[in-house]
Picture 1 (spheres, rainbow, N blue to C red):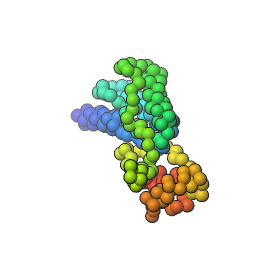
Picture 2 (cartoon, helix red, strand yellow):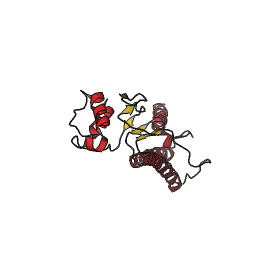
Picture 3 (spheres, rainbow, N blue to C red):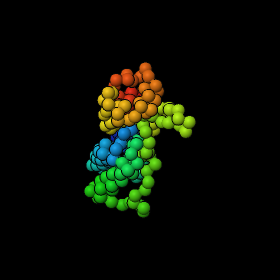
Picture 4 (cartoon, helix red, strand yellow):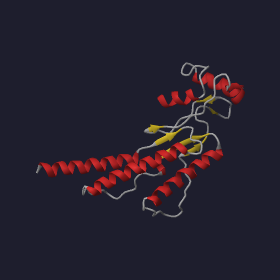
Length: 191
């Protein structure tokens, strides 16, 4: 019947949506201690939970699979302490969400290192010979965050001549030299 066909199609749409939600990736290229990644993970988990509740309430079967989790989040942070803290923030937020929603079953070890939160510069990379290049960012479906703000007139004092000269040369024609430091993140994200 057409009703049964529509129901099967609706069930497939739910499954596809859950699958896409579980495969989506998010990048914060100046993640600090991970606050934006934490909030993004909470929202993804809430949305997944809402869709699963809808499916159950309307008698749609949903497949049991690994869904949304910290493995979907990527970060870049120049400060090594903050990068480590971001990993902990994400994992603790994930475990708290699971606990608060009655799904507190996890495997040991509870916390594992996240290689997808990297400690490095997001807009300038120096090689051993002193030359500079634009670093690659992980591919992501969504880029979010709060890049560092530093007015163009304060950059030399805050970052040093070598860094600023390399930055200007590398990004010439893409970001005006007088622009705030955050503009480099916006240009890279736009690109």
